[in-house]
Length: 150
Image (cartoon, rainbow, N blue to C red; front, side):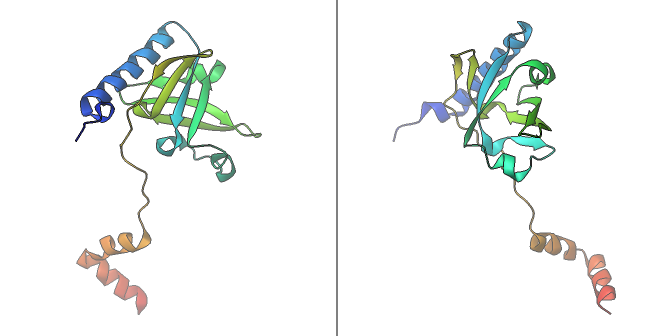
């Protein structure tokens, strides 16, 4: 069995540091750039309208210039910025895990190419059934439910 070197913890750590240092360098040089990212792990605050979200492919290109570039921040795990989307210029803060960034471009030149896959926490909603089960695990809550029924 062959090990995929690009999915090892060592390579993922190396890529995350490389992406972080490259973007930090671009900030220091006041150089605008673009990032191509996997959309499935990106969060938007506030959430984008469904019509805008549905217009994205699996990989999306964000061009950081002007206000979007000025609003951008990075830490060792995440890259974030504010941007406007759609015809209405719907404002949202975009937060991207660094390993979801597949490429970094300056102009037409790709300067980072990331083969590591991000396997972080996936957004999962809690179902009503599991919420009710958790609520009913406490005997005090069962008493409240019985009072409501009577």
